Length: 103
Image (tube, rainbow, N blue to C red; front, side, top):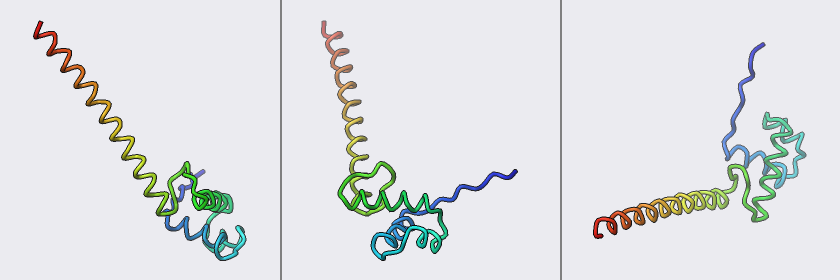
């Protein structure tokens, strides 16, 4: 028994496939067949694109450029907040050491 290789698709491919259904009127089975992907995967991509177009943040990797940018900015904010927290703790530690020495 051979293990099937899991296929990966670029976000551009997913966006194009989902756009066939939402923008060009293809049914999910038609679009899945023409793109060579499974119906379940395409249905997920279509649902995700609907959510993103509705302005909500996706839980998976974003498909639309706007949501990609939002995810990148949120990741940057999280990283900066973690760095700020580390710096606060380091400053407090250094200040407590300085107070100990001055006594």
